[in-house]
Image (cartoon, rainbow, N blue to C red; front, side, top):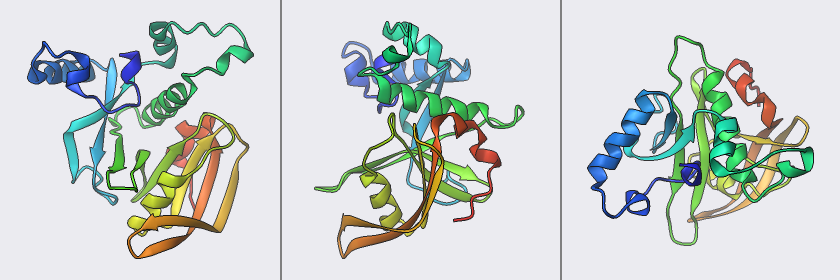
Length: 211
């Protein structure tokens, strides 16, 4: 399970000896029991975000990041040990876990992600998140730096204006930023960026985004 967090599930990689329908049923039961949450792929970028959802393509999020560390055999005994080869997965697990827990207790928070599979221009957005009646792409970074290539591709292709980055840096905003994209008929993007530290992920639902 730990190896699949944040990665699209391929049944053949789990077991070639078990029929995919049985594995799918097992994942659905784990989801119903709240042991995992399935982040499903969607082609929708507006409300309702689930209208173009693919229920058979998903990434799992585990119940708790502490339990995930235990399953992965990671012993976090001091601050220096926080930086591991698994840090990208842990950052994504933490953010998605916080987005789920940040919703109202009577509301079942569904999460989705977006992927573009095209020659010379693949892109994947970690999460599409609805705040009021708007849908925002969220990119998760384990450090203070990191490219936003996938975010740029998404904003350009879907004609969106604002993206959200969650990382280890201090909060910041950027308006009318410029980026180069590799899309048919378009190579420049002007966009806005809201950048927040990872620990504020659970507060996104309550934020007024004016960018």
